[in-house]
Image 1 (cartoon, rainbow, N blue to C red):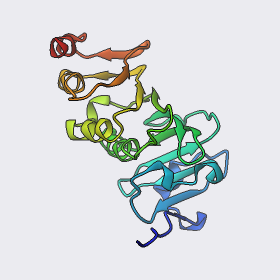
Image 2: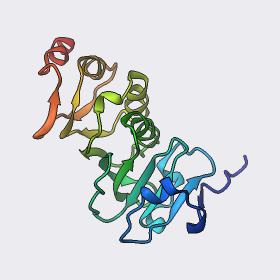
Image 3: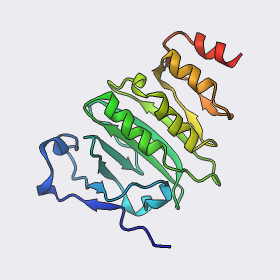
Image 4: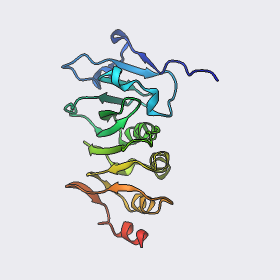
Length: 199
């Protein structure tokens, strides 16, 4: 069986486009990479040694990943935490920036659907969504996220789920470890569709 090739390639600073530069923090020099292939598992990343970095996606979004808390930039984004990720069980602070909620949702679907080791107590906590519409997640995207990591603990203290999304989440054919609590979280229909789907 062939070993997969390299996963990330550094983009030289002098090769960055204007849009890529606009999505990077001005106060610090942050390495930005592109993916050479599509990973399927967080274990494919060497998170512990990579440190703080950005990953550029072809849909003009960027994923910020750090093992330290950072202040999100004042741009459209969704920020989140991943617990016990990869070979070294890292605790990652992340944010995805982009021009549209649809593009951010597409990149979040990719990143949140990467397999997460079932041997650890792991979780995804969605912390903030500045100018990000959670309604941008289509049902196939939610299916990819939830189905790929059925044992994951999901904490969603912010965002608004519409009725269609609520019914979809409530009717998964497996048990979900899901917390929908927090001052920033709401159901668009006050949870009516969600409760009816559970009954």
